[in-house]
Image 1 (cartoon, helix red, strand yellow):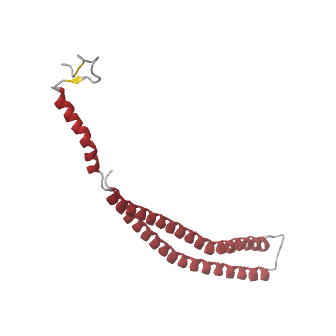
Image 2 (spheres, helix red, strand yellow; image 1 turned 90 degrees about the horizontal axis):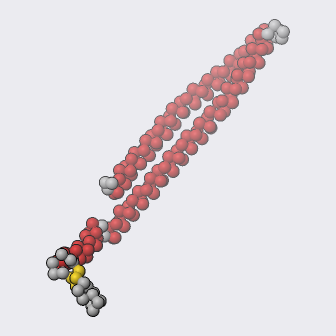
Image 3 (tube, helix red, strand yellow; image 1 turned 60 degrees about the horizontal axis):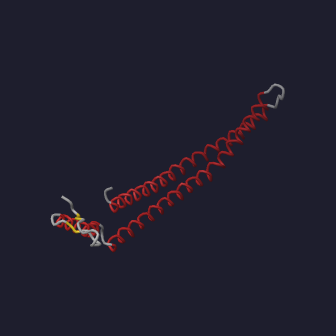
Length: 175
């Protein structure tokens, strides 16, 4: 069976169509015309699409703000460490040098310092060590409370970020 008849091709500009092919071609034409309608039904309306998109962009902006807050928190924590540990470290280095000098002065036979001088210097060194230990204990106390505050803030930011991630994934739907 031939779909297109070419009997009068020289006389007519269009070939004739077989009667059996007409219903098939008509059904194919209907399917082609209805395909854009079904695609439009599957896609949400443009007004409905802007609402979740606006919500999604707002949530992503909140997530960026949380990351900025976390960075600021880490910077505060770093500044705290620098503020308290640098002077303490400087004092510790000074004590180490004092100890080395005192040991060299009071234990060496070649220097032969007066025992009274060594006892007096050792007492002063012990006072400096006591002061260092007091500052260290104070620092440990402050550090523990400050670390607890930093951890609380960090946990709060983590909780907020997880909540925003959950909302974002629910808006995006299953993939």
